[in-house]
Image (cartoon, rainbow, N blue to C red):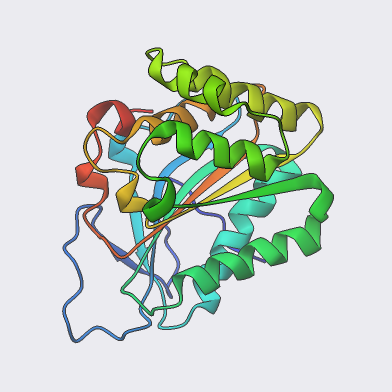
Length: 233
């Protein structure tokens, strides 16, 4: 049975616990060593997690174990309505993307692909203006989003949250879980570009949205680069 991640440290023997603010692994670390770090863990209707709840877990040098851990989280999102936000950390070539895609495929097979929508965003392509990311989200969700309307919404001081909220409510009304995979997550977390992250994590507190946010990055210090308002969501 897949292990369920929570803000409290896991007391299993296999994963090796790391402090939340741990430094990057040494150059002698196996190239396939992965860290599955819990950024935020929320259950719909539950109390928000705080930054003090961050935990980190160093996995075995294979992509299989983190994929199993992530599958457990995603399955809980789809089947039980639990909202989760997770960061997968590891060096380039470690198999992070493979682990994530395997977990997503497992979830679709177990729960039914019709019960979920996967939105894949790249920090390189969509980490700049929030309007660009919103248009891509609307495109992948199959919703109509006028280009000028998206740009106006994000330029109107926080209305990007309204656009995103409408898209997520549409999926929720159709009994679908939205799974966001953010590749090169650290590029979404650069200074002055964290609006999308804030709005995604803020949406996790809504009772009219069911979603998971999965970040993929080689940067072990990405949490420290986030604005306080993002970390507090």
